[in-house]
Amino acid sequence: MQSLPQKDSISVDIPLQSIFDAASQQGIEINRLTGAFFIAAGFILLVVTGLTAYILYRFRTGRAPAATRSPAGSWEVAMIGIPFLMVGGFLYYSIHTMQRVLPDAAGRTPDVIITAHQWWWEARYPGSGAVTANEIHLPVKKRLLLRLLSADVIHDWWIPAFGNKMDLVPNRENHLWLTIDKPGVYYGACSEFCGAQHAGMRLVVVVQPQEAFDKWQAHHAAPASPEAAALPGAALFMEQTCADCHRIAGTAANGTTGPDLTHVAGRQTLLTGLIRNDRAHLEAFLRNPQERKPGIYMPYLHLADSTVKALTAYLSQLE
Ligand code: CUA
Image 1 (cartoon, rainbow, N blue to C red):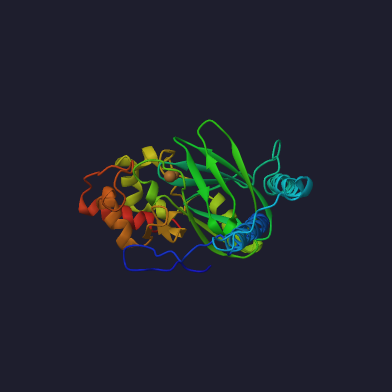
Image 2 (cartoon, rainbow, N blue to C red):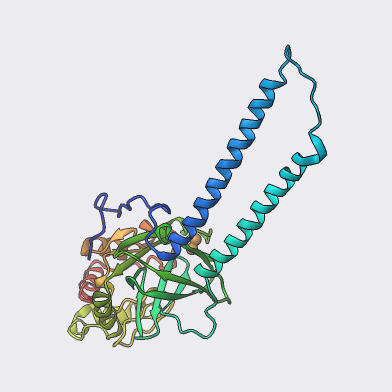
């Protein structure tokens, strides 16, 4: 897997993401429609500015020929008829594109269920039972159905390279279809203001060849490493109330308020891609969760230094 670019020791630097660099079938279709709109708008701009320039020149003061009425309203017919046809044509093309990009999904089992939370993303894979957070893995060249839910307020899914965008609304099920053409790491962000850390609610999607994705999925459907459970940090995780908010499959920790940590060490970043996932960053985060991402629901826990170290050692083993 391609590793994430790093700007400095603190944050993860994200390369420029552009809608024009479409990496999905849906993105290509949307860009085709946008392109047609741009060409038509450019044509109208040229005609209007051309006619304006011509009229200014032809009827300028000093020359002033008498304006004559064109016969039988032929201009009026053209001026009403051409825009009417263009609006009609684009209405048809827009509806056609919408139906191709976002067909109905009633009765279909989604490939992934994405739930947005303040301020992180949860991904569940109903076919396998795999669960992850923030670094969402998807297979390449497969038509995928994503079900989009929200646990609290309205969020918005937006990966520029994939083209399509969709709100995640509380008490409502939305969906998206995605057929991604190229493997790679794609970035986006929540695009609906959702509170204090809206700007820190990045989206990271790792697109893999089918075989690598299947391997990843099977691993993420399995419980956490039993060897890690013997570490002192495992017991502290239960004692220090971590288990009330986080789940680690295969242990008694079953919280659902915060991200699933069953395979947290397998992720390259923490905090929706804000920091690198290594011991130093994890330790700093546990010491004061509010420092890097102020406002998040993980409180300052006043953990003893030895506890922080033991928890870090434990979580780092959960690959
Ligand atoms: Cu979630 Cu903005």
